[in-house]
Length: 476
Image (cartoon, rainbow, N blue to C red):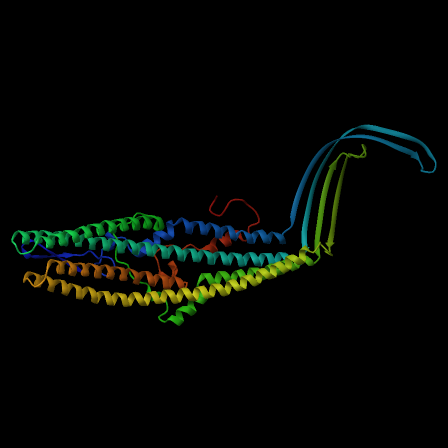
């Protein structure tokens, strides 16, 4: 707990407890305060960016049943009705010795019902490769969703800690203004008693004006942080409880953190799945060089005839097969294969880039965490020394050995030290979340948040083997 001291008229000192419930200080009962974990839960449920990415993941799931359709038959039903006018001249007898000719004219209504089934038997393994590529895309989409989850949760933790920090700094500045107002009143009393000069009063007035201006800036920063909290977390902030670090969820050494980040960070896993999809795209393109074998079956029922009035109805059934061997398609298929190979090379380089990015992010976040820990120790010592210095300067001022300016400077040093401590404590917590995000562990499952986690596998299993229907699993 950090306390500031206000000088009251008559030389008495009134302790004013600073509500640095923020970062290292005063415990706030959970029933009356928002908690950091609670804010993360609200962001996980309410953030529209995360909801949009979940929808995108579900849309990607549908690529698998789309490609699985290549294994299934295609059925087509037809129904036609035609009004036919016929003018037919027929020969009687043989072609060499015709005995005469007959002419038939009239109108006829022809109705036809048909059913055709087509099944692809072989297409250069393209259906299987497309299905496996769609599955790789599903896995990549899930990792992209993890990236969005980590981004949203890190933004939520940062917004929470920013509001907590700005609330503490606002309280510090309010307390500082109260102290400066009391100092000004005492200085004016001393001026009336002939103890100090008008210069001392002007110095106190100047420092009070600066304190009020700083207070207004602190109020502005607090209002901005409130708006950002609402934007990211989705609810209005209440009374915030202290935030805690998440060091326990990631490795204790930097090499171990880098190793875990390279293995589990969704940036690297997404890039790896993109490589798999690119490999399969090459195979799909190569499949265009193979023959395509299809089987067909059709059944047609016709009532009436467009050629013979005497035909009242007919039933025709056909079963057959076809093989199409591509010989040359203008070179486009070869260009497509080369293009797919270049894309594969690009995706492999993207994987290396993702690994370098993850390694850099882990090292950077780790360095910020170490610096924040050291900064806390330094600023705590700075605050303790500034409190002692301020108390000593005030006592010496009463004895006439120090000026009003010395007291004001000592008070400002203490406020600056406390601001630095608040900022360091804020940075300490945010840096721990940054490390957890960099190693790929910033998720409700790892942190044990009290919420039902969104599982993308559920939707995938619901739609993967669906043969029909236009309604989504949620009923839309």
